[in-house]
Amino acid sequence: MFIIRWILGRIILLLNVVFAPKKRHRPLAEQQKIDAQTQSLTLYQYPACPFCVKVRRAMRRQGLNIQTLDAKKSPHKDELMAQGGKQQVPCLRIEASDEVQWLYESKDIIRYLDQRFA
Image (cartoon, rainbow, N blue to C red; front, side, top):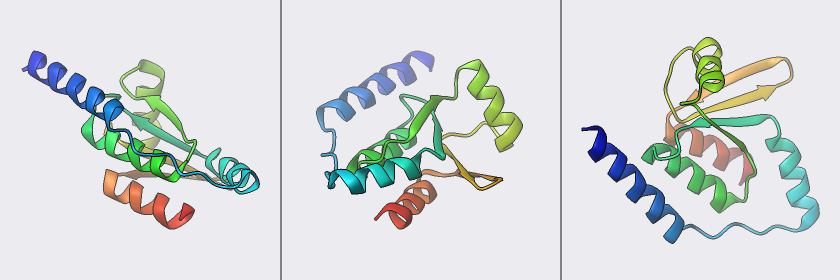
C-alpha cells in the first residue's frame, strides 16, 4: 500500500508541475498590499496530498504568497497537533490581532481565500 501511495503521490506532483495554473498578475502596489496581508497566513500541508495540491493551485491562481510548512516534519507536525488540535492537512493558520484561527478542509480554505483576496 505504501508503494502505491508513493507512486500516486509522485504522479500528482508531476501533473501539478506540468499543468500548473497561470499566476495572477496585479499592479505592483496592489501585490505588495496583498503580500503584506498574507504574512499572517500559514498553510500546513503534505507535498503530495491531492487536497493540499488543490489549495496550492488555488493560491497560485490568485497570486498569493502564503508560507507553506510540511506537516510531516517534527516541529510543524507537533505545532499543528498542539495548537490546531488535530493532525489533518491542509490546514490554514490565520493570525488576526491576538487571535489564531485554524481552518481545515480544502474547500473551506479555498472559499476563504477567494472571499478575502478576490
